[in-house]
Every structure is written in C-alpha cells, then in structure tokens.
Length: 183
Image (cartoon, rainbow, N blue to C red; front, side, top):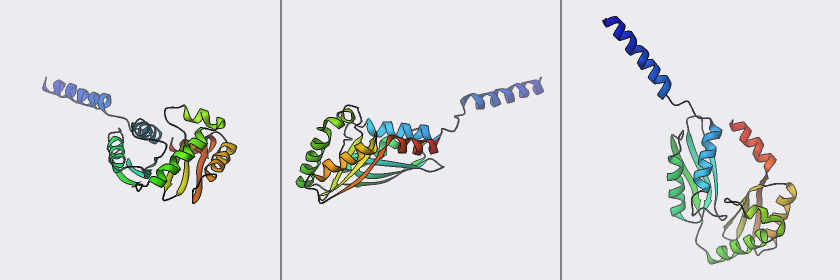
C-alpha cells in the first residue's frame, strides 16, 4: 500500500509540473508585450522614442529619448512587469527642457502630420513617426510604408529651423525582417 501511494504521489507531482510549468516565452512575444506596455502608456507621445534589446536571459535594455524623467521611470517599471522579463536596464535619455525645442517639435509635427501623405500615420493609437528634438537637432524615428514616405518626412523636417535632421525611419519591410529574427 505504501509503495502504491508513493507511486501515485510521484505521478501527481510529475503531472502538476507539466500542468503548471510555464513554457519559455519566445522573444517575439516578449517584445510585443513590451511594445504594448510602452505604447499604451498614456504619456508616451510622438516626441518620445524607445528602443528595446532583449538578451537570451530576458534582460531588457531600454534606449532612446523621452521628454521627462517620470516617463523614463514609468516605462521601465511597466516593462519590468512583462512576463519573461528578468530585469530592466534603463538607458533612456531624458531630453533637456527647452522652449525652442518644444516649438521645433510642434512645427515639425504639424508639417509631417499635416501633410495629406501622412494622415494615415497619425490616425493609429500609436503614431508611426516620432520626432526627437535635442538642442535644435532633430531625429526622425519609427516605421513608414515606403522609402518615398521616409524621404518626404525628412524633407518636411528639413524645412524647419532645425540645426540638423537625422532620418532613422525604417520601412515596414525592414522592420518585418528584424522581427523575423526574434521568432
């Protein structure tokens, strides 16, 4: 009787491990969950840019620029709650406060999102083109449909009083290739 009870207990223990053990989450799913945490943060705007790197142990490195220290802390906190994330290294840069930079951000946003070619980009819950301004220097980031859109966005930004414009926009095709490497 003791042998039979031990065997049943062993089977139950083995069965419970199989039922309750979490399978390792794929990097792509973890990335998508992180992306959702960042883009659904109500203070994340087109003037912020966050990039994510995930190592094989689930350590996430956040890089990019945000317009306030509270954003940096809250984004890191939100990412840390994602299942599959073992830790967060917050390397986000907080942009300096500047009225001139604020005016430049708004002027470029109006130029890009006010152009009928870009209306479709501004209608989603997470706009595709981000405008990072630091001391008069502009960097465009995000994802657009084509190389033509990438070039047009840069042209519109260059018509501002920016000291320089760096175009880091990628096409859907380029992004798709990067995401396939995570899967």
